[in-house]
Length: 112
Image (cartoon, rainbow, N blue to C red):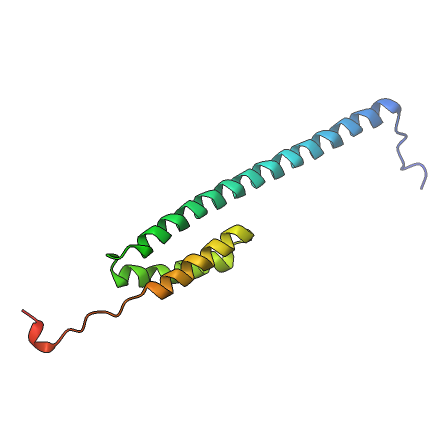
């Protein structure tokens, strides 16, 4: 009962308060670091999307390259938690689908 409870003096309470404060500051610093890492990752993804947009939009880009870009683009657009990244991903995805050109027909006599 009451015998098991320890009496906390001011010194012990101030020490505990200081430890709790340090724990909260540490957790806040960790959260800020994670937020910055996420922002940097999103910035890189946006730059990659811009690069893919340019490559896909180029008239000489082979259709096979465009086809290979579709699945990762869709995954990026759907998997992002950032609205800007989602919108850009879907825009590039849509542009990719609309820029696909039919492959040239190959007849049996063309093989040399």
